[in-house]
Amino acid sequence: MIKDILDSNETVSAQDREFSVLKEHFPACFSKDGSFDIERFKEYISDKIDVKSEGYELKFLGKNYARLLASIDTTTVIKPDKEHNEKPENKDSENLYITGDNLDGLKHLLKSYAGKIKCIYIDPPYNTGSDGFVYNDRFDFTVEDLVTRLSISETQAQRVLDLTKRGSASHSAWLMFMYPRLQLARDLLSDDGVIFISIDDNEQANLKLICDDVFGEENFLATLIRKAMHTVRNSAEDFNKNTDYVLAYLKSRDVYSADSTLRLRLKTDKTNNYPYDDKDGKGKYKLDPIYARNYAKPYEYTFSNGIVWSAPEGSYPRYSVESLKQLESDGEIVFSKNGNPSAKRYLNKVQVGQPPDALLQTEFVGYNSHGTKELAELLGVDKVFSQPKPSKLIKHLLSLLYSSNGFILDFFSGSSTTADAVMQLNTEDGGNRKFIMVQLPEIIKEDKPAYKAGYRTIDEIGRKRIICAAKKIKEENPDATADLGFKHYVLEEPTGKQLDDIIDFDRNLNEIIVTNNIVEEFGTDTVLTTWLVHDGYGFSPKVKALAFGTYTGFHIDKHLYLIDKGLEHSAIEAIVTKFDTDPEFNPENVVLFGYSFTWTEMESLQTNLKRLNATEKNLRINFDIRY
Image 1 (cartoon, helix red, strand yellow):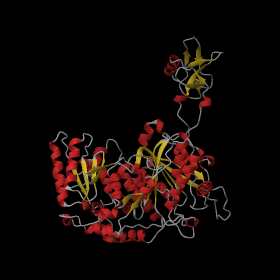
Image 2: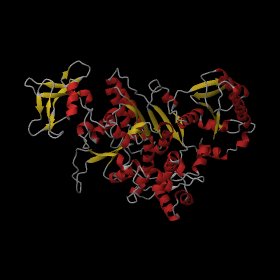
Image 3: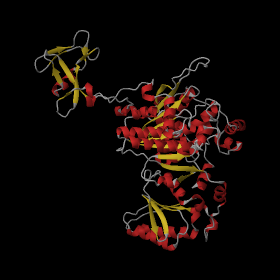
Image 4: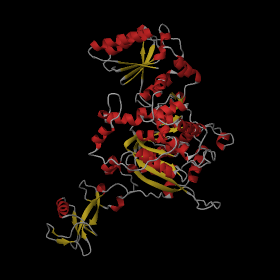
């Protein structure tokens, strides 16, 4: 677990994420010693891609350091909020609220949700100078560490460390903060996924550059413009800056362009525009002229009823001769009383909705003041959170997506506007969107209205908002079947004592008896939850607690987890018997919390499980000891 990660992180470099992608897809370009053959790589791609020798790139102090942060694994563990999660409204919920640093949260999510997130919306710090943003991180790299890992000079390494420790709010500090988070966010998006990012003038230009760098310039959709305030600032020195922006990017332009059903569309009800229905199963339609201003070359066409048609003067045929023949053959040409032909245009063949405007209309997205009022009405306290976005904005963005299902992620979740919007939208259209909120437990200052109202950290406001919003939805929609609960998890760093116990742990001391209390310090539930996410099962899997005599193990699909102390010989026999006699019990991986077992217990279990190779199941068990 943590010790394994600490050991692995010691050798991580800034380019590890990129190298892992290359090794997966171009293994032949790596030599035996692990070096990369760039010339061979060029040969592989030369017939498909034009290799440019010129171009430009975004550079800022700490860019390679930011890449390093994206590459190293998190040492946090996931502690479930058992009391909250076991409440009736939450126990079956698939919505998630994660309290913790979003850099850690994203790394945990990647282990179970990589390529599965349909949409990400974030409203990160704007770096206005008054929004409280300063860059600080908890990593304790030395100058020597960075020189080795980033291949930079000592002077450059010292400048990076100064930037990370002095509480900087420079553009470089903001970019260094955002870059690793956006890299991880991209990996979470599904191939048909979209990310929306709110921002204002302070960092909009830099955000566009960094997103081009991470997502690819070809995946840029638009910069949406929103009027955020309706008031006039007479004190402004120049322009009344009352707008903000939403940058929109795709995960893959190739996937988006290949399927027209994936288009972002403003959905409108066009039923009234299609008044006819022949009750032949083709659905409603309207009649369109078969001529247009400029389509096919002029021609004369004779219909089967003898009517000879050509496009009126100044216009052209809308269809080619072949297409017109097909329409007539399919019975989709209608003649008026005076013999003028029209074509049937069916509603189900029309692209759903229309392209949305990049200039967001206030009636659809609201002002910031609407968000403030909305939150105050829900919580009964005014100004508990600064400038929350109105739920109308998030609902509008989500409604543009082709699907009403899938995971919606917000890793700067603040007052949980996104969660509120997801629940509202699901109630309105019957969708099955599932939200994932991640929020740092940022301390609230004592002079703030939120503190006076009893809130101590920002995440408390977010969770309370979800509960109040769910209550409001239930009251207004008694028959609603939408998921209005959520499960709560807290990301925790090991305490100093826990870390000391882990680092000082000597496996040889467990030869006869277990001499540590590490499993008690973390808790079985925390270890199990962290492992389930690590192994790809997510935060809400159906795990079976199995009794092997007096010992309890945990089984799901291909994994059997053994975490607690006290694995007696009778329990080992019970595990082997379960394998032998239960045809539905076939985990291929037996995972042990190494601190909880003696060498004798582990060797006995491993020896007995090897016997399964000779049984009818012919199982080859992967024995995985984690520290």
